[in-house]
Amino acid sequence: MHYSVSVVIDQPRDRVAQLLQDPDALPHWQKGFVSITPQQGEPGAPGSTAMLAYQMGKRELSMLETMESTDWPAGWIATYEADGVWNRQVNRLIEQAGQTRWESDCEFRFSSLPMRCMGWLMPWAFRKQTRSYLLDFKRYAETGEAVRP
Image (cartoon, rainbow, N blue to C red):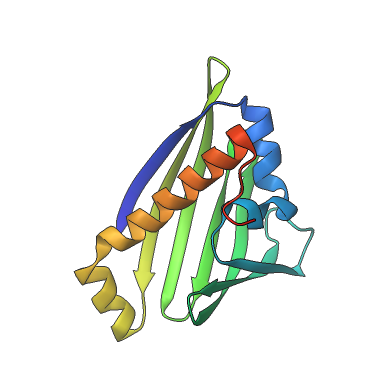
């Protein structure tokens, strides 16, 4: 499954890139975020890995993030692996008149039957979740308002 989402953020690209690279900012714009634990390499550098933990209702979710490449402030490419799901995101930060357009191209592959069914029956849910993260980041970057107190 492939899709793209984008959002325009009323902040300069350097500021957006700075916030996106700050692991301490994650709880402010990613609903359900619990922790990030570096696994190998310099955190955020190409080739580095980190374990991300989320609480989604009563369900705990862990995923391995691998940074494929970084070209800050222009963007980054990363993969995310969880039970039955592989996700690659190509993220571009495009400067436009003091604002930043964040474009995210997403590719999902499913290896378990339940996730294949979900991807086939509810592809809109994946796009909605990605869009929600981008909009939550936009609100945080523009106003400082966090998704949780």
